[in-house]
Image 1: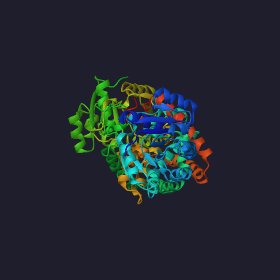
Image 2: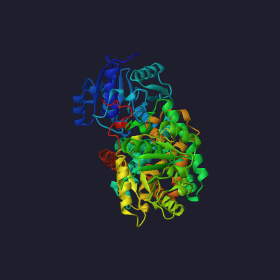
Image 3: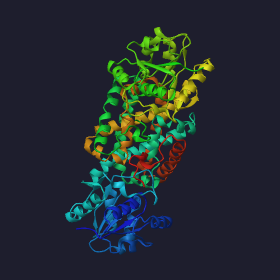
Image 4: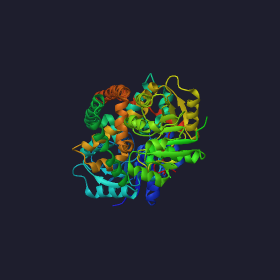
Length: 303
Length: 303
């Protein structure tokens, strides 16, 4: 089972990258698209993010055998309702949302009788909008597919093959497990980065100019993901509330323990904690999920 | 006032980079060095981090008009005592430590009558040891000089000119203000990164392999600074305890407020917070303190 026409609903970073990737790596497959925002549709057409941009969502999905919803997770339900009248028989409706239990329920409710197979390519940058996408975004990244119980295995296999063609590696798991894993690898880091950048911005004894000048001491690393799309992230935290709150609770306990070690001057406890975290970085680099060069290779002046 | 011979005590990332930078950008200046670790001295000599590596700290500083202590801040006192017998008249003793009030006191106590002018080049990578240094580390980074009250202004000017020659921009402030500024731009980010990497490592419901595979969702950004030298960072937290605990308190308050917004489902509050943090990232890039390319330019495949 292969796809002949892929419709992309939402033409920001993820939707645009998917459209460009299909055109680059699956050249025989037709692509169409729609976005709720007028200016985004114009820009998407200019950049050629998909072969044809439609002004009507139902028209955009007509005849497509794969539809991918690339809107913030809070907008999934409305997007599904908007495309419903145009969906062809046998179509697979999937998505790229960062939380999966809430999205699975929203899509199943909005599209009764349709084959819904949610997915989440774990890839992105801090940019957003129709100018942010690029074809190679998914290369070597993982795409997690979370089929509902009883999903058609041929359709799951077809969706897996689709993401693999775009350069991703595919893993299948339950939506519940996905939401717990991503709470720690993605949602908690974003929440913490947004928090610390806000904390620094609010200090009365340190100027914003000082925060910026001396950010190379570590702070700048956090500002990257704290520059991500606010609407997308608002929706992620609201839709994966339980898992995020659970991870936050654990993080706060661990931070409190380190805080206590600092207050008591317990250097041994601090050293033990700091010495064990290097191994994870090494594994991430070995697995190809980050740049091996020091300082993310920012200036590559290590030679 | 210019320097003829610079002695570097401690030949890890910062000491090695300083030695290489002096040789690259101040070719007429002699460099000597010492490290407490035998293997580091051997490797430093092999790499030519300084012109001459000594086995005795007092011999290394003999005749030097500038001595820079590049050891963990907890080792400053012992390093100062070790070099004391060899110091020449009129020498400036400085350092590169990440906290300044504690170091200023340790050096003043260990070296009575010596011109001590503490400094902190805000530069580094997550690497450590004698293989980590490189000459261009300080290019476009800020170096903060914290002269004690009544310091000789000609000596402060000479030390400023030295760091500027190595590519840094110099700012002068009190040790107290330095410690507050760096607590937020460097110490708190490191503490939080160390914490979250530990939290992820401890989860029983998510495997370490999953944390690594899906780290591109944001987590990997934190693993870089959590791979930094554990001894150095233990000492930073112990030596800048008050400012770090103060910043941690503010961070925790802000995190608790966001946690509450998530629990209550207050999307407006989340959006407002997330929308204001983009401006800081933009300013950091404009000021030349980070890479303007998306995703830190990790794979530079945005074209």
